[in-house]
Image (tube, rainbow, N blue to C red; front, side, top):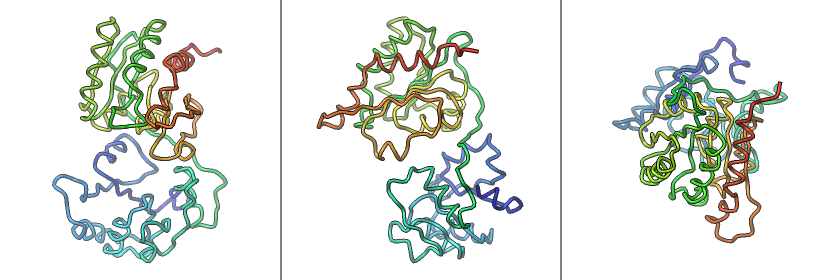
Length: 302
């Protein structure tokens, strides 16, 4: 939307190092990426990053995060026109501060911020998209990415007992090669899931804590299906237009605010009366998960 408003202007994206990797294979509307040194290794001070930004002589910044430190950083960098939502005590630092309705979908929040600033020239938001390479672990089977989260995900985690049943049910009717994703805190749990699948003669590759964000996107982009909880993996699959099944428990944000606005995913939610939030996701049965996957893997009618 910003590129459509400013077709000739240079546009920069200031972002965390691991997120910057996602844009290596993406034109991203002709934007250039600046890695935020405050989150790099070794970390740079707020003052040092501000001095670096000041050299660009930026005329405007859109704050897509509700961060006071980001607004302070841009103030120190001499950027006078700062646009964002009036959150976290940063209103005095913003030239245009808009009220944020917490019911706004996250995608709408970002698009609305640009639209309001320019007198609402846009009727609708563009579709999300992402480009990535492809990394496959199989030649003949269906590559199926699996991310059900670890126990530290609390109410979003889909437990081993249910996940293992869902994958077994799918493998009984489809030739699948499962690829397990996760971070360092999920190594032990995914190893147990990988051992279970191998013991039952089901092909699996466990790359937990062995991928960068960019490599993760490459694996998802080469897959026929993604299983995910409410996570970054789900949103990457949505942006890459890869079919996915999302198993949704009680999340860190209301589901209505984060649900991907796409049609190639199946979102399994529970309308539970269980008081223990961590147990609500257990009411989504392995049979439901497997059947949703089968529908997405079924040959498309022509």
